[in-house]
Structures are given as C-alpha cells and as structure tokens.
Image (cartoon, rainbow over all chains, first blue to last red; front, side, top):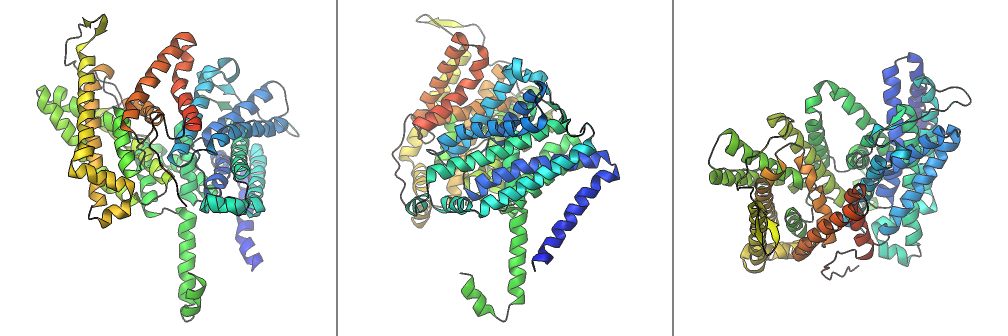
Length: 323
Length: 271
C-alpha cells in the first residue's frame, strides 16, 4: 500500500529530473520558479493552514531573504552561506511581526502584516545604498562546487532544496508542535488549558513561515539574477495567500499546486496581456466561491465520496465512523 | 470619509473592503463620462454617477460577496483584492490607461476666514462630509433599517430569528457605501484627476480606519486627522521618505498597544 502511494511521487520526481536534459530553457525556468514559490507557499501554509494565523506579508519576508542573500554574495560571501543567513534574517523579521500577532487576530492581524510588508517595500525603495532603490540589485549565483550560471545547472539545487524543505515541513506538521498548531487553530483557549504554550507556538509558526520565505527569496534572487522592489509588493503577498487557498489550506502539497498554478497561469495568458489582470481576478473569485477548500480539498472530497460509494452496503458502519 | 464607508461595511458585514478605492475610481469615471464626455450638466451627472455606483456595488455584492458570507477572514480579503484587480483592469479597458483632468466645480481663488486660507473646494468637501456623517449617525440610531443593521452586526442568527433579512441588510450596507464612495469620487475628481490607478491612493484609508478603531464611526474621523497630521510632521522634521511609512508604522503600533483602536467599543470574547 505504501509503495503504491509512493510510486506516483517517484514517477513525478523522475520526470522533474528529466526536464533539464530536454534543453528547453523556458520550461526549466518556469519549473524552477514554481519550485521557488512553492517553498514560500508551503511555509505560509504551515502558518495559515496549521497554526490558523493570517499573514499578508509573505512577499515582504521573501524580499528580506532575497536582498540579504544578494547583498552578502555581493560582499564576497559564498552563496551557500548567504542563503541560510538570508533565511535567518527573514525569520528575525518574522519574529518581529509574530510578536504583535500574539495580541491581535482576524482582520487586524491581516492588516498589521499587510502594513508590515508595505514598510519593507518602502525600505527597499528608499534605502538606496544597500538595496539599490528602484534601480534594483544584481543578485549573484552560486559558484561552488561548479558554476551555476546556466539555468539548467541551477535547476538541480533549487529542486533539491525545495524537496527538502517540503519534507521538513511535512515532519514539522506531524511533530508535537504541528499538532499543537492545529489545536491552536481550532480553539486557542482550550489548547491553552491543555498545556500548550500559545506564545511559543505562535511565534514559532511565524518563525518557520518567514524562514521558508527567506530561503525562497534567496533562491528567487539567484534564479532571476536581479531584484527590484516592484516584485515584493502587497499584491505579491496576497498572491502567496491565494496560492495557499487555491491549492488547499492545511495540506502542504496544496501550496505546491498553488505555486505551480501561479507560475504557469501568467505564462499561459501572456498573449492576452490586456486581459490578464481581469481574468486573474475572475479566476480567483470563482475559486473562492466554488472551491473554497482549494484543489486538494476538492480532491479529498472526491476521494471520500468515492469511498462512500464503494462501501455503500456497509453504510451503517460508515456512518458511525464519520460523525 | 473613505474610511467612513469602510467602517460602515466592516461594522455590518465583517468584510474589509480592499477595493474601496476602486469604487471611488469607478464613481469618478462615471462622473467623468457623463459630465465631460457626454457633456451633461453637473448635477444630473453627479446623480447618475452615484446611481451607477450603487448599481455596481449591488451587483458585486450579489455575485461575489454574498456566496462568501460564511467564509473565513482571508477569503473575504482575497475576494476584495481580486475585485480590486478586476475593477482596475476593467476601467483600463474601457477608459484607457492615461489619466484625465476633470473640470473644477468651483473657482480656485482661495478666501480667508480667521487667518486660514481655504478654497471653496475644501469647504465643499468638508461640508458634505459633515452632512453625511450626521445623516449616517441618525440613520443608524433611529431608522428601522439602521437598527436592523446594528442588530445584524451584533448577532447574525439572533437578528434573522427576529425577522430581519440578513442578506437584504448586507445589500443596503453596500448601497450606502456606494453612496459614500460615489460622492467622494466625484468630489475629489477635480483635485486628483481621473485615472485607473487613482484607487490605490485610498489604501491609506485602511490605516485611518484602523487607527480610529474599525468599529467606531467617530474614531475613523479622528484617525483621519491623526494620520494626516503625523504624516505632515514626519515629512517636515524627519524626511519625506518616512512620510509614506508613517501611516503603516502608526497602524502597527496602534494594533499592538491598543488592538481595538483609539476608541474601542468594549467587546468581550467568550468561549
């Protein structure tokens, strides 16, 4: 049974590894980008789908990671050292926004994180000596152990890191803290009564989420080779939230689906640029109304109903198990 | 005033309308179409524009927000964000990306009262705002519909048990908001010009609304003053780069230290 579950995943992995050899640069770039965004979305899913917080500032953390990494690389530090440092800096920023989250919730938290992202955006624009302001910053690529100047070489570390990050996220979610997050989302007061340290859990969730964003940011910079403040606006933060909702909140893999969708859709609509924003908005709204639990939620619902059909004879039994 | 409309929506329907500025923009464009393109006289075109804005709001409420009444917080926020994109690109498709100028309603010659220079425009905006606020206050306090809205805000289920149609109340709320934003759009059109991106200017409305306390109407007015004054001071004494940041910074600070705004309504959360 376990093998049967693993097989499609292995097949997918095989396909992913095959892609660089096709030599199709465009495809390689799109998939790398999807993988990078997936890291950010999966991180956000831990925060939103499991810990039940709201964060409209993911692009802000992405920016922190990207700029710190790019800046350190520019100062001559190795990329592989700068990347985790960028992640850590983003996590510290996440801590800063995690602290207010201890006191506020709901709409107010959404607004606070949103204005936080806005502040980061403004810092990027105005702190020209470090960030290059609106002119942007050149982001270096890793040169060790081999030069990753070509997209098809950079592809491998990106995919590898993305897979590792997703696996780590999966383990976090299944750990004691992951279960505490879920409890937190269901009912804060009850989970407090059960002995869960709410303060620690909330800050931890923000830390993890922003660390993921920081790593994604560092890779994003390396992939694009150039950073400018316009790629980290509130709209981009909202896109991350949308990725999580679209893929399915609280499923982790949903984040990957959402991120992939978000990378491919603009590419598909490239010819109709005039209509792009309009159709984007319409697609979002349709998703929100007709598939509120995202793609993964939809798939799960299908699975459940199919299973119910199969065990139609044992309906009574089934009814007992599913309240 | 923009904040005021947002507070009305939030107060009654629990939705933060990110696309508020886009409604303002649509209203300004409607006014522009009637007044400048079709060369209607001023008053009929104002009324027509407000009417169209109401219509637009009602359609949007029915199609987009009503199915999402029971959805979680972020869904509503994302939905209004998607609305923002839709309205903006629609405006761009219809009226094109370039900004237009709108003929002023009043002479630009300032006059002086007690040593303060004022333009007729400012006085008109201020006057209309005050009138609207008073009307809104009376509306919420005394009319049947206003009372119904307050009941819905307190407890949806209890209100519907009392025979109040929650859905209809929501439609009314959006209509009221449309009157507000419609008026704002038309009043400000000569000052700001009309363009598809003008709505983004109103994002600051959030900061104002939150600083004043999202649920309090008086608060949103005071919040507006606080943000305006703080921005000017910071721009003058520190640097203009800081100016844009001030409203966001204030917002975060207020949220952390006074989570319910400057003028909180006492709400106790029960298990």
